[in-house]
Length: 430
Ligand SMILES: [Zn+2]
Image (cartoon, rainbow, N blue to C red; front, side):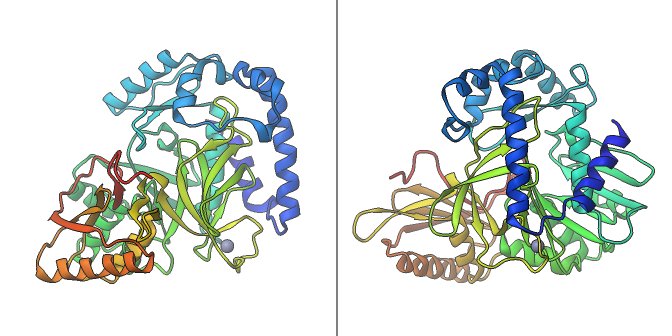
C-alpha cells in the first residue's frame, strides 16, 4: 500500500479531471486506449494473437467463461489460474484476505452466471482504486476525519481495511450476526456508510425501531441493484437527502453518483460501448483502460443500464444514467398477444409493484412461458389482488398475454445477491 500513489490518484480524479466536454472525455479515452493496446500487444499473448488480426472494434466480446478459459495467456503478470484460484479459495474459506501472490491481490467473484470468476489486481492498481473511490465518495468540504463503514461480501480483498491518518475504514462482515453488526456500527458512528441495499434495508429497519440513531454524511448502495422502493425507504429511515451508488464489480469500478445523486459512468478510466436494447436501455461492453494485470477488454457485462434523457445539473460530461436496472438475464419474457416473445425488463416489474400494497418484501420469478411466481412476505387477499392487478396492468400495457400468477411465501436468503426479479434458468426464452 503506497499512500503516495493513493493520494496522486485521489488528487487527479478529484481536482484535475473535471470533464466539462465530451470532446475532452473522448480525447482522454483515445489516448489511454492507444497506450493500453500497445501494452497488451507486448505483454498479453492472448491479446497479441487477437490484435494481429483485428482492430480494437473487431475484438470478440469477453465474458467470465472466456476469461477463465484463457486466464494464463490473458493476464500480464505471469500468474497461473490454478495457483491463483487455490489461494483465492483458501482466503475465502478462512475469511482472511491478507494472503497475496507476490504483491498481487486475488479474489473470487460469485456472480450470477454460474461460472466462478477470478480476479487479480496489482498493488498499484489497488492503490489507484482506493484513490479513485475516495475521490468519488468523500463529501465536498471536509476531507479529514471520516469514518467509513464497509459492509461487503468478503469476496473482494480490494475492500480490505485501508487505515490511514486521513480517514479510517472499518470492514463489517455481511455474514456476521446483523444485530451485533448494527451495535458495532452504532459505536463506530460512521460518517460514510457503504453497503448493499439488502443490508441498508436492515439498518434502516433498525433506525426506524430506534436501535440505530447515527446519521452519516453520505450513504452508498453497492453490489446489488437498488430498487426504487428500497431507495425511498432507506433514504427516509437514515435521513439522507440522496442515497448514493457505487457501481463496482469484479470487472471494474464503472459508475458513481455525483452530488446530485445522478449516476455517471467512470469514463475517465473505463470505455463503455453500448449494445442498445431499446432507445434508452443498453448492455455495457466494458474496457478498463488502465487495468493491466488482468485486462478487461470488451467485456460484455450483462447488466441493463438506462440512459438519462437530459444532462445532469452537476455539469459533468461523463455519461449520466437514469438507473442501473439489473441483470439482462432477469428480463422476463412473456408471450405477446400476437405470439411473439416480449421482453419485460426487471425494472418495469419493480416499478409496477411500487403501486401494489400489503407487503414489504417480494421476489418475482418467471417459472414458465406464461407463468410467474411471486413470493411475498405477507400473502393475503389484499396483497394477492393488488399484485395481480398491477402485473396484469403491466402485461396489458406491453400487449402481452396476462401470465398465470402463483403466490408463495417469501423466504429470506442472505447468501445470494438479492435479485427481486428473476427469470428461472431455461424459462421463457425466445
Ligand atoms: Zn451529475
